[in-house]
Length: 79
Image 1 (spheres, rainbow, N blue to C red):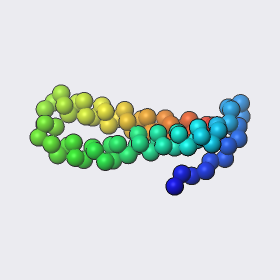
Image 2: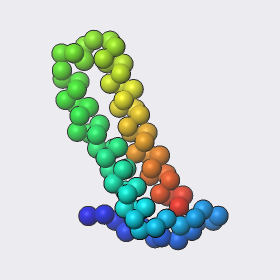
Image 3: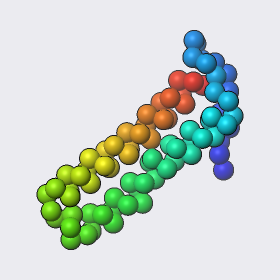
Image 4: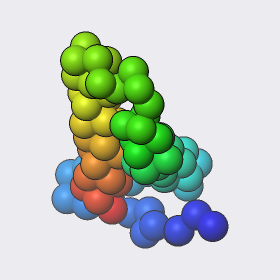
């Protein structure tokens, strides 16, 4: 279930519509859950031992987590 956020402006930041909040909550969930779901499994694969694949995987994990955190911050700033 999607949490309802207070949809009012915070300082000079414009308020988000309910649709925008719903979309951003979905994006946040997907970005954060990608690595929860896949990171452990990827690290079990034999190909993970390859340095290039491991480096890519670690960068991907950081990037997806950062996206989720950035969306969370955006939602916080906009109330």
